[in-house]
Length: 102
Image (cartoon, rainbow, N blue to C red; front, side, top):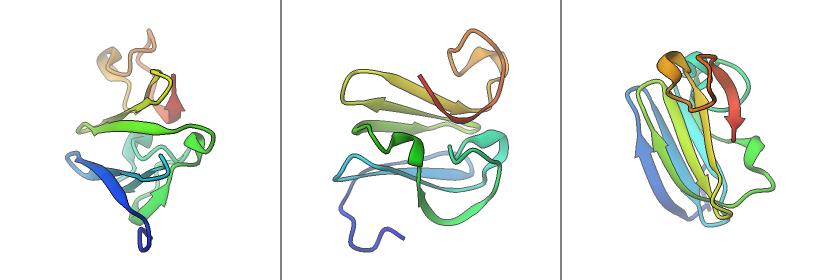
């Protein structure tokens, strides 16, 4: 899935991984529990899949936690998704996010 793409950065979580490609896209794969892959569902991805929520964004950094993911876009916005327990996503609640949210 990443064939022909130039990967600039990667991050490995407990059971999922994230990659940023040269065009600023984010790709994720692995276990999708709690939406931590950012595709709007909880499906497992056996191959890297582009996170479409960032189609109009340029992502400059990512971090994969055990149950959630973070991304920083070129405009300085912080995005988070996945397991929201203990408020770890920073949205003021404990809700899981299946898609990246500012």
